[in-house]
Image (spheres, rainbow, N blue to C red):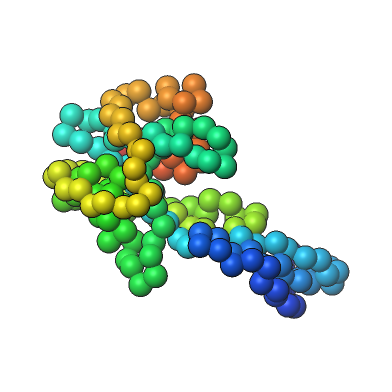
Amino acid sequence: MVMPEKKLSSQQLYQGRAVNLRMDTVEKSDGKTTTREVVEHSNCVAVVVVDEQDNVLLVRQYRYPVGKFLLEIPAGGIDPNEEPIDCVRRELQEEIGYFPQKIEEFGGFYSVPGYGTEYLHCYLATDLVPSRLIAEDSEGIEVVRVPISKITQLITSGEICDAKSIAALLTFLLKRE
């Protein structure tokens, strides 16, 4: 069995609003040293939202790094000292204008474990009540209702193409079976 790498030193390269970047020097199991670049990002929530008509509520928003509008599930970063379930409530009110009366956690995953620390907690939100919180980065978000039966088609066609949405939606669909 290969042993974990041992951190020998760490250097902070960048501190930003959304991410930090550090470079660690590590000793590998064979005794050799190398460096690892690590993007530090807060943990997040990723939420599959289902309304009373069995539609999944998705958001279409422009993603500057890829230069496209993407169709995604609602998601967002967990603030310091905020519980994930409270983040779910806040994000849904900000992004889609609903307060979920029922929230169930159904898993989670690391988004980019090869170079990043972000862990996404996955939730199912139902029993929605209209409730809007205004956030500075939520303007320009379009809410799109899609029947649950169409989700796999949107994934296989590439219309839903971000990893968090694909992973959370497929996990949700598999757990429904």
